Length: 241
Image (cartoon, rainbow, N blue to C red; front, side):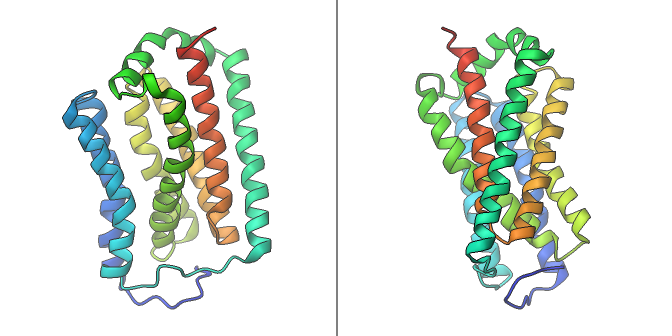
């Protein structure tokens, strides 16, 4: 089930104990910082704490609990190049699809109808006056963090616990669940669920890409391009010319 080059020593029970909170906490945290306390110092602090968890829990769990090597895979130059090529093409395809849907489908009307709501949420997060900076930080740094967390750590451990299709599906479900909570604060619930399912499809593709080429480079590039596309649409909506 795995192409890791280093042997694994942790039991299934221990591995589930580190994966279960990783699947659940982002969903629980999203209710605090986006639903219960949005735009408040407590909510924003909770958001920061959740992101620190995303960075530190995989490290703590891998080294101190699972007691496994941090660098287990060797993709090689060819693997990285193929990953970047496939990931880049997928990212560009999704961006093109989003722009087309915005211009030539009811999606554009939904975005316009919820423009005020989106602006209020973005302003509450303190991002409105620094939108371009936030776009670069989230698209580059946060995308890398999410790939490290959801693909390397969550999917990377699930593939040792369940068959590969289930591992892709469970990791994608965890990835999409908190995105539904977040997008529901910008859009009607039905549209938020649709967007969340799209996020889940992207997450499943990125975990497949990671498994196929044993590197996160392509998934990160793809994720980054999609996030830049989302922020571009947001910029045109919030700052019309």
